[in-house]
Structure formats: C-alpha cells, structure tokens
Image (tube, rainbow, N blue to C red; front, side, top):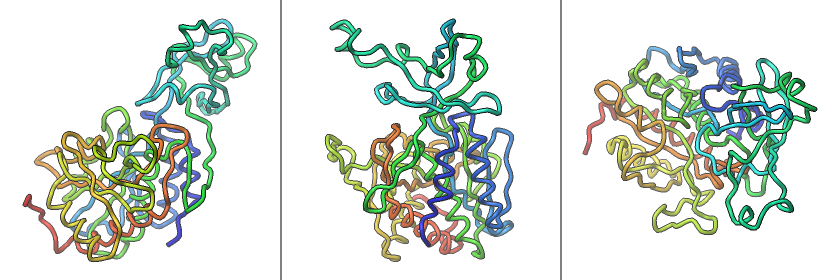
Length: 350
C-alpha cells in the first residue's frame, strides 16, 4: 500500500509536546475511526485503536505521539515570552526558529530571538547558545498585548511544514515519534481479519520518561508488545558506525537486541523478516532502549517486548528525515509477524 502522506502530514502539523498531546491524538483517533477500528482513550491521554477485538493473542503496538517542545515560564514587560524545554533539546536547534504557540483553544505564531552576533562580546561568540538566553517574540508592543496570545503554562513547538525530498524521503519536525504512531495504526488496520487482537497505541509522555506506555501496558495487559520508534540513521557525516552500527536510510527497519528486549520476540521478528524477504538491520541496546519498551517490558509479571525502529537523520531537530520505504517495510514486517503470532506464543527466552 502507498504511504499515506496526507494523514502523516496532518499528524506532523498538529502541535503536541509531552503532556499536551491532545491535538495529534485527535487526528490519529479520527483516522482510526474512519478505518473502522474501535477506539478509546485512557485517563492519562493514551489513545487506542483495536483490530479484531476479542481475538488472541493480544498484541500491543506502541508508538508515542508526543514531540519535544517548549513551555512558557514568563512574559516580561516588553512582551517577550521566556521558556524552558520539554524533552531533550540541543539549544542550537532553536536559534532563529519560528514557533507555533498553543494558548487555550487558540494558536499563534512567534519567532525565537537572541542577541545578534554584532552585539555579542568576543566571549559570548565563543559560547554555545543557551536556552535561557533566548525568548519568543510574538510582535507585541508590551506585556498586556502579549498576554492576549501567550502566557505562562502555554506550549510551543517549531513551526516547520513537512517537505518532500528525493528518493522517497520526507523531512519535518516531530517525526520522532509521529512515525511510530503512524506505523502502529497502519499495521493494526492491515491486520484486520487475523486471529490476533491488535491494539495500536498512540502513547503520551515518552520524551519525559515513558509515563504513557507504562500506564497503557498495565491497563491492557498484552501478551506481546512492540515499541515502534526511530533510531539514528548512520549514513551522515561524523556518526560513529563502530558504536552505533550501520543503519542507513533505505535499509529497512532496525530490530533492537539487548536490555529490555525479549530475545524470543526479537528472534521471531528476525525470522519473519528473513522468510518474507523484508530488509532490516540489527541495533544494539546494552543498557536502555530509550523507547517505550523500557516501560512496557516490566509491567506486572513482565511483557514479552521488542523494538522496531525507523532510521531517522537529525533527530530532535526541525529537519528530522526518514525514508518512507523503510516505513512500509516496518509495517509489512509487523503484519507478517502478527499473522504468525498464534503459533509463536507463549514466548520464552532462548
């Protein structure tokens, strides 16, 4: 099936950093309902879409829907909004960027300002940009006017429209991890009619510590879980392949092995990919996977959990870049795995 650019672009454009995911979650849920899946939301904001309700085994596909963002802390007398980061930012990525601010039910645009290089001291020029030296300018003449569109507790995200590049590649903010939520839902849609109950989850608050996936796994109690996320594409300059492995764009999904990853599920995914002729690479996570898997796996008596990741260039920037052919390969792998799942469970560690 072709990549659904319209749906994915709608997901990317919806502002939704950790704890404020309702806008992209609504886009995701509406698409799931239009596809005929059963949907619901839990107390903390996770959104679920189920194919084959009542079937078995129960497979949870977890793709977090939050993005990194900014939280406004203060609006000063001149009308400039000061902020802190939500999630893991490289402050250099923020210099001179346009942002979209969510203020109640309204949205407004602003730009991130910083002292111009002409006015910096020689010492300032040598120092890396710091978040505390930047502010958001909405064009207001003063505090009172600014507070009409931005205030403490409001969130902001980079304002960056997705762009299509050559070779089936797309670049945007928020690909980490709207693409995981996209894959989870598309795999659930394509699994309709199979034996397994497949629950796609657009989980919340992964960027600040896996809050949503822990709650989702506890409440759903799946037999098997797959965390779907992004991994570092290593086909760009200065990325150490000796430590990170070789995961170029176009090489298919990465299957993680190591801590928190259930080796039985990993081997089943690997065998499925080999037998179905689906390209993949193997990634290593000797400590944490830094995905929802770290929280899914240790729920209750333990959930057999694996990680499927999409290679992504320039992670945690406004220019994250993926190859949509890798996305389709990931979906095909998960659906093929789901088709075999009844004969694979229960999983044991080899």
